[in-house]
Structures are given as C-alpha cells and as structure tokens.
Image (cartoon, rainbow, N blue to C red; front, side, top):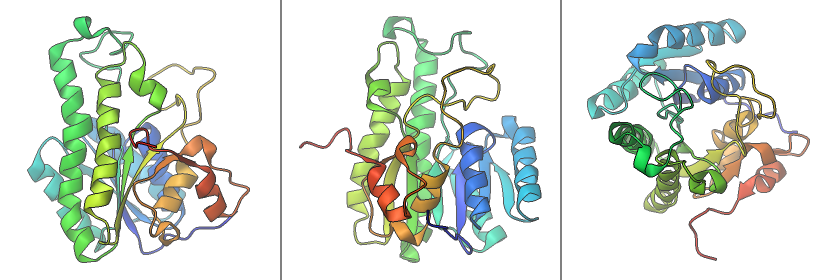
Length: 270
C-alpha cells in the first residue's frame, strides 16, 4: 500500500455535506489536502457541520464550507473565487453533486419510475443538476487549472447496469451523459496538464444519511482511496478513464491498485 501525501493541494467537492461527497472530502483532508465543501444553501447547516467535523478530525482550517447553487454560473465562479481567496489555490474538482433520489418533491419510493409516470419537472431538474451543473462547475474551475498547467476533474457516474436499468431515468440518462462528457473533456484538455476521469462506487452505497440502515450496500468510504490517488501526482497522465472504487485493492502499491480499478469506458468502441 502506498501512502499518498496531498499536502499543498486544494480540492472542491460538490455535494460535500453528506454521503459519498463528505466521505471523499474527509479522505482528501486526511491525506493532507485542504477541502472546500459545497452544497446548496438549503443544506447549509449540514454543510457547516461537515466542515467542523473534518477540522476536528484533522486540524483547524482544513475544511471550508461554501453554499453554492451549481445551476447558477455566477455561483460556480463565486465558489472558485472563494476557494482561491481562502486557500490560495485550486487543484482538484470532484463533481459529486446530484439531484437526490429521495426527499422533498419526490415519491416515498424515490424517483425510480417508468418514463410515462415521471414528473417532467423532476426530470428536468435532475438533468440540470447532474449534467448542466457539472458542466458549469467544470467550466468555472478550468481557467485556473489550465493556467497552472495541472489539475484534476473527477466526475461521479454510475455502473453500466444502473444506466440501463428499467425505471431508472432520468438518473441513468444523466450518468451516461457524464460518461460521454468525461471522454470528450479528456480529449479537449489533452496536453494541458488537466486530466478528466470518471469514478464510480461499483454498486449501491449506503450514502443517504436520511435512509434507514440497509444490508448489502457498499460502505460510503468505498471510493476514498481511489479519489486520493486521482487527486495526486501519481495519476499524472491518466485521463479519460473510468475507475471503480470497489475494485481498488489497498494491499497493492498505488499504481497496481489503480490499474486493477480501471473499467473500460462504457461508450468507447472496441
């Protein structure tokens, strides 16, 4: 197992107030990075608490909470500017934010419905958050990352089965779009020093803090080691790839573990 040191790195994690986003922010902080947690203002209390708890687990000043609506381009730019002012840099963007399956405005069983039963407003909102919001955050971060000739864009997607499963639109549709975006952006940024990769857990995770405990789910920390490697210089040159947290073997050196965690991009022709 390779110990990875992220001292001097600064990462933004969207959807950082809960679940997978918070777990990855904690892992980045424990590796030495400064982390900016972003979430909507409506989740501000949970967001601030997450930053305080990361500080308590690492050291004061490690985490910074910034409410942000990724549907607003000006808010995305404000988040990047706030990060640069507060920590003096930005190196990693983890695009984790998504429209939740459960919660206000959704049926009790979540938004897993046939296409003819899905509320058009929920469909549109899911596409806007998951796809448009990811683009807007990436677009806001890229000028700085490209200027310094080093950066990481990490897009959270999902398994091929989830993308295609019945009753799983719009969520599956949005994650397929992000897989395409990952490969397109990786080519657009080739040679710039900025890499773009997708990251998935490898199965359903216990990532909803408002859901009763459910057996058989992967731990919320399943992508932690992979995201730390992706955020480091050890991943220089690796771009346009798809990494699976469940496949990361922590007993191996990081390079070997990373090779074992790669899954063929779902849209690339053989």
